[in-house]
Image (cartoon, rainbow, N blue to C red; front, side, top):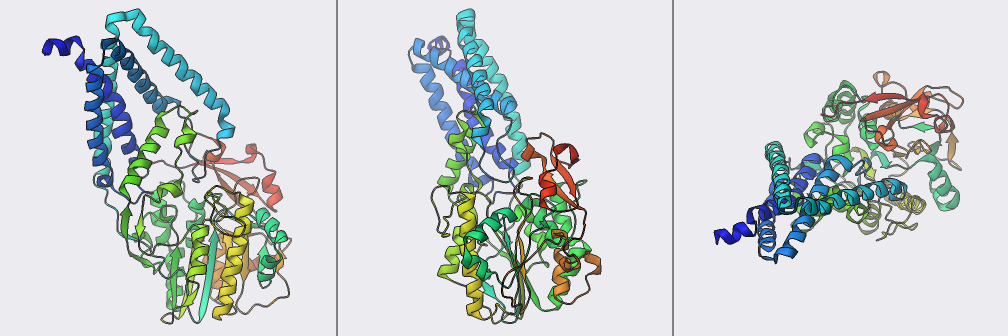
Length: 552
């Protein structure tokens, strides 16, 4: 038996079979998890031990097959296994240039055809070399290949143990933003803030011109068509707006997301609102973009509650493996294995009354449950962060869900339908007149469409038609504006939007993430401008200042 195993090079077969199993079954899923722990709500035990068991079984089966097959077939398969494993390793280590967009949108594969072709040529050349080697080294090539596989496997195992030490202690808090009261209003004063992700002013204006009902429902609002979000990305735009504390690039993102909520500008603002008997609620499914942890906003927001994570194990395993394959295969194949954020969120999510984020779900809940009044409240300050123009574009112009991707134009039209329904329900409840209603976007899309939507209706405002102003306002003004409306001193918060008027000159900054320009360095391009959207749209990259931030 020993002689037969030696003749069939059993040890070499097992080593060759080990490398792909380690890459695709153990290290790959573990790396994905370790790199995204702040976005995932599941923990190691929810997926890793299943991968470990499956990998062990597949390794034994693959090794056994390579050993018992006829030698000629087995030898060809061994070269195929080694070649594929080596190329997968090289792809992940050296050939991957960009795997995702930071904003979670789908990759623009049509713009990457050159990279796809180059990457495919590299695979073909290396594969050709791997298949030529057996003809040169004849009986020795299996020893060479199994030795390389053994070395790379050892390296991967070291990485596995290193990652396990890092992620084993992770056990997420069961607290999160509850959405139980997202569609509930206070009977007295409401400050309602609808933050629509990525809705930029030019798209809003197109939608407005195409929908007379939308323009009519907004007649009591003032539209600021020269608003600035400061940051062209949900992080740090939303947190900065809600805390009044500018992003600090000298510390890590996680440190800033914890610190910003406990600066005087934030703590004093929410303490004042609470003293005025306002419940303060933030409804977002994007916790990792807003705060370092739920505990960071306890005492700030009132809708932090215990939540139970629900994990759909089979879907989670399937998606984790799909994401792993995506890492290792050439670019020409990657589109078939791309997993969007919203799909991953279906595999593991906070169970219970989590905040409603996606457009279609938000609209459906409006139709099914509707807005209501919570008689136990006095006043309420609520911020609802919804998907907006951010991909996935999965609603039609009538706001009904779509199983296939539509377009940002259809989504914008659908948002108009959602806003009409929301405001009509506020009127039916009898709380519309007394409410302060702000509809804004957390940011624009890019430098060609940089400015966000900003609309505001003051309590008891009544107008014949929507007013439009080009006053140079900013998200920097948000907290001061709320206090100004409430008749409170806002000196420590800077300026209110009502301190700015048409024709005023104001120096503002747009922080644009470098990864959107396919830069390797992590940071922001900072553009300075004084007038309006057209100035910032015409800025050249040479006019920007690079600000980097720590990665760890």
